[in-house]
Length: 497
Image 1 (cartoon, rainbow, N blue to C red):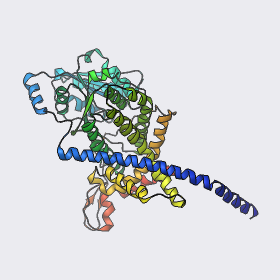
Image 2: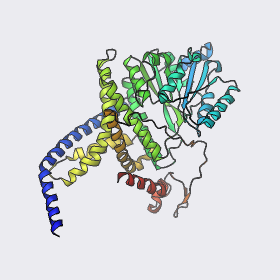
Image 3: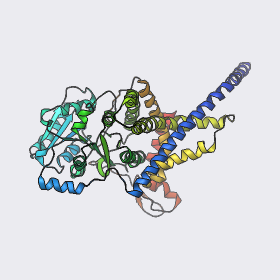
Image 4: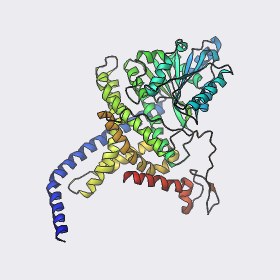
């Protein structure tokens, strides 16, 4: 008992000795996090105002006379030559989908080149991909199969070497699709006219359409986050500064703009964003065509999603470190565009957003509850976070009932994103880690869906369906699969512990 008493006294004395400096530090951190939270709120609010103005007035930067250009192309038959690049790496489940979708694009066959850039290490899979390419060649399509004995530069290296081939020297535009993307047949007819009508335009970016968004709760929550990115961030960037980050796929580039910007570089894991920023500093403009949707697949396992988010969070932070001086010293763009790129695009969205979600919401606010000496105003602790949540989650009305789960999910992921952003800023050991996101080919797999029968209304439900019964007992079974919900958040609990 004497030993326990002494240990207790020692711990109490240590807490008292660190109490005053600890409170001082906590107060400083509270003020810092409150400032970052205000910056994030103002950025979200300003984008909401701009988007509302664009919707009401109809003043969009990408209003072009597309129909007249399409008619001119058909009448004069002066179609520009287009290259379609499909980079892939061991994509057993989806390679047929992407190659088939690219070969079915409606464009004169003599003005279209489909280039399959296969970096697969599986020799059997390489043969399968090559056979699929040959199948389309036999149908009269100009399909080129390219593979490398190494993965130097990863995706950027494959795209760069693909553009160096002699047979693409006369291609004016290049469309890029990842292995799980399936463009509609009229994709080129709806994107190329933008580039023909405006010679200052470098990129036309289409929107992603998720084919497996209803597979499970995690994919629904991912859809909520990405819908905000497409509906708000890219639309506002296109309408104000004619700039936004290229998503790496589902876009059409002007080849001259790529060469003018210095080509593909593999210095970070976000080669797409790197190229977009460099092209913008050269004066090129971008357009976001949100009415053009391209099917693709969301990561359906937590492991795949975690690796993807590490790359998407670490890469931008590392690119910001490498390019901030270049942006500041660039003389070809306005001061307004520099502020937009540095402050809005990089600092607030790619760094502050992660730090606020993790350090402020998950650590600082809970600490202020147990340290009464540190005061945190309600507006900072409750109202501003609630407003940010509404602005973020409101982009997906069909999932508004999942907002609580989305908040929990985003708080957990903020740990990984914050860690990745710090690694990128400091250039840590995993700064260039590249793990290809696993694809399961959800559009061709007829997965058996477990069915539930509502005990009150008799309605049959699957993992995620619409609410059919007004009774409370079956409310959750209609909105999500409880078995998946329990197992998923059990994994999150183990991750936190």
